[in-house]
Image 1 (spheres, rainbow, N blue to C red):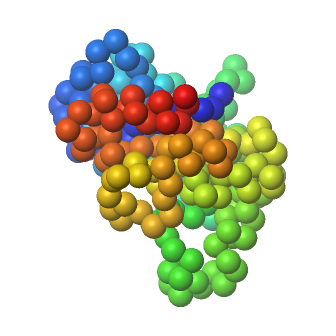
Image 2: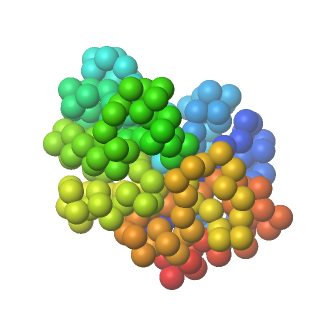
Length: 232
């Protein structure tokens, strides 16, 4: 597992998404389906993309009381996705409930990962708006340790934090890192960002890349550039 580029298919319709994926003739990149697309098209878009042979990271970031998350994860497990996530801020009990809910009767389940702090969140905002007074790296490590304690497979974190997460939780604890931009690209609304090559060097297991690929003049070439820089 690990060392793969996940394309964030943050589109608003089935037609736009499938037209984008049709450009990858002969390739089956790992894709992320987020809230925008899932809320627009529902479970059917997941099933269709899965039927095309893609691995899927279903990025819905669940965060609710443990029983609700458990039941919701049980529903999502039927979609045969490869990775799902939830917010680590929901406590260990919620993460444990999620793991129980997503595990199928035969014992199989997708990878379950926890969001630590969004890469659009700066330390200043975290402290001033969320009243979390610890440094952001310490907060991320604490959330990651809780996720590991709850039995999860890894966390979503900034690529700048990936190496330290492995030091804290072990080399086998996965780091899924958004906030990836090419050295000559625009940062957009991300705050804590790195290039694919830097993410590889730091120790990210998966990188999630959206606009640098989806908004590129040649998305396939941009994807291949990401793979070359990150996977080698």
